[in-house]
Image 1: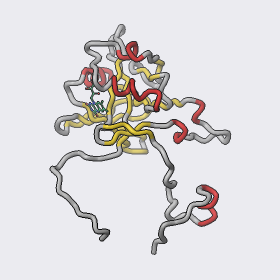
Image 2 (image 1 turned 90 degrees about the vertical axis):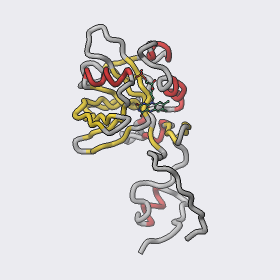
Image 3 (image 1 turned 180 degrees about the horizontal axis):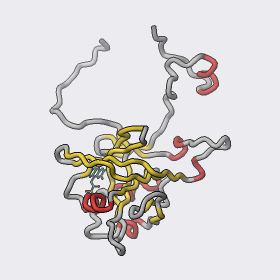
Image 4 (image 1 turned 60 degrees about the horizontal axis):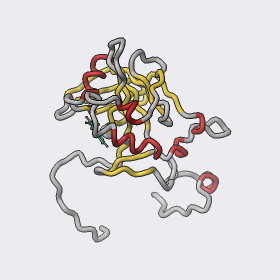
Length: 210
Ligand SMILES: Cc1cc2nc3c(=O)[nH]c(=O)nc-3n(C[C@H](O)[C@H](O)[C@H](O)COP(=O)(O)O)c2cc1C
């Protein structure tokens, strides 16, 4: 024990940090105006087939659009989009055109018929709804990822995707944070010293594992 003193809190969905994303969507009618809803209750449901989950309250305007079209696009948020992301989470598409209000551009999302992507987002994932699960306050939409687009500036010279360059935004209990200091990489706790020295020069392991 480290001498910490614990307190008891009421049961609540206090998961943090979580990603925050701008979900673009559109009704299946010809002249429909595209909309954006901000969501923080999103996640990866499966990598094969690639599937995301999005928890949406039935009273949101976007809920009906996504239900009707069966499509949504998850647009990741960087520091440039952060204010617009908040705005799209406090105003409804029932009253305003959020693309217009934020000065954002809707572009076609490959593999989707109705939902557009947000051109200004560093990375967008086009999703087709495969299931809607009633959970409680929110319904859980499962969306199979059918296309991904990213700003070319996120690729390094070796052709690797460098999402760490995007200054992505996370959400922690009511506040937004920029992803900052790198703390490690997948498997670094057990990586060989040579690998560790190459990928994290100057890093000294805090402990060894049995
Ligand atoms: C940071 C943040 C996270 C949010 N996360 C969710 C969420 O996960 N699910 C949800 O239903 N609403 C969420 N909201 C609320 C909706 O974004 C908000 O009600 C929005 O105005 C709905 O837009 P619409 O009526 O145009 O669909 C969030 C809002 C903010 C600001």
